Length: 249
Image 1 (cartoon, helix red, strand yellow):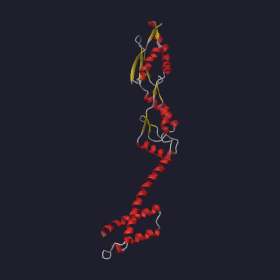
Image 2 (tube, one colour):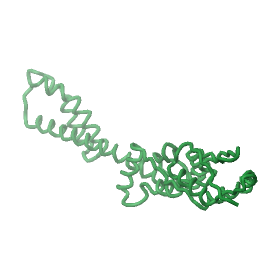
Image 3 (cartoon, helix red, strand yellow):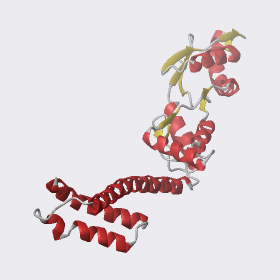
Image 4 (tube, helix red, strand yellow):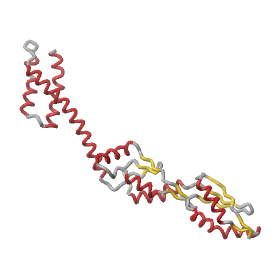
């Protein structure tokens, strides 16, 4: 019994010191008296050792202190982490962990993210190709979806990314922010094709095509060709060939 107590005493003393340091609920005098008692020769002397109520009280106090210091330390660590996250929330930058598909936008301002999204990400994502050709001539022209006016709704995606962990109670924001760090949020911007933009692109090449078709007494059917191109673009095919439609002159 004595050996068990003597083995645990040093550990309990250290725990008690930690508890005193962080809580300051016990007086220095009490701390010194308890530690002095537990370190005394009286306890170490096997011939005179005898369990008394004071022993039980002292050990009980230290056990409670040990548990209390453990709980306090854990709570202190959690509180420190929460405070750190609260500081991180106080920024106008998009929080880390937000992506446009695999393109990182965390740590950017909304303006920076919009600029990079439109000029880098969109152009990269819209490199699908359409070749316009003619059955009667050697005409063959290459267009990317971006050239033809296909776009991604970058603005909505950026606004959604910026809005993460910015509303609600602070506890909810901290939780959402932490989740964003641990589980990245991948946004897939909406894709759209504007028929009017496609038509405008077709109209730009109309004189050139009609010049080649003049020999066949035909001309470009802008409306039908536009519809065909839009249909292909809506399928987001990586590469496609479209034969232009023609009308008799």
